[in-house]
Length: 339
Image 1 (cartoon, rainbow, N blue to C red):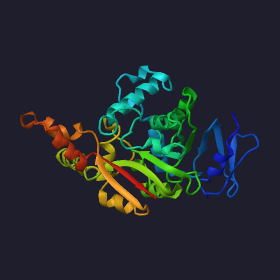
Image 2 (cartoon, rainbow, N blue to C red):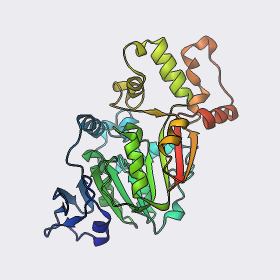
Image 3 (tube, one colour):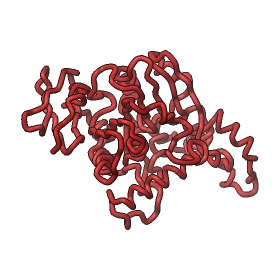
Image 4 (tube, rainbow, N blue to C red):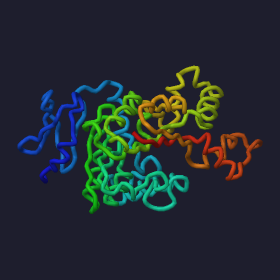
């Protein structure tokens, strides 16, 4: 195992008490100088910094996403024939990411270039909260940007770290298994934070937003994506069609229904998936000095609408009208801002 950069050690803090961490003499673990909690170092630049006590709900979320990774298996039928962690696995995962975000978020590489100003992040320190299979981690590190990627579950964090072994990154890549609600970093540590489609799945989403504020440097910027409650998808597809027409709201709450009809809905849904309104988000991000809310998403979600279920009434919305609807009532909400 390579010698750990002392600048990285100085960046870290205990997720339980925020005490300083010191490196063991064998370089195989960290120890909190305050509460004496020990944390494992699994491989070069791969650290386990989870809080000591994890609730039953958080454990459920952690295990579910570890078994249902947001990789190519979520998009490609028959992907079981591709070996996990192989070059082909990552290339196909990234290709699907690119395709899903085209053209509203990217028309070329790097992925998400319409939303992330990569050039401004050179010589900056980036944190990605909820790295999944490491698609965005690759975009940052491949451009020579120092990126610290964190995920709650080990399988996703391990897949992201595997990219450092397969790619000759120009930048510095560090991977953590950690908790977004108890980030293992000192205050004011990062110049930019990305958390894309992750924190609405957290046990305590407000606490996760507060943690982003804590570790972001004054003047630092962020991009967070959550599900948009002020959307056609939420009110028409989930609440009206599934909740009322199909009677699901007679058996479950709106929050249970959103978990049922979002990620892996064909397998019965996921443990938690909140949809948040503009009003709620303005309150939840009130600590930040600047906050901008951008409804967005694939045009196809609105262009077809649910009328395809009723062929006699089926119609197609012109693209320019669909785009205006997406810009106001899109499925997802991109939140940008500054501390």
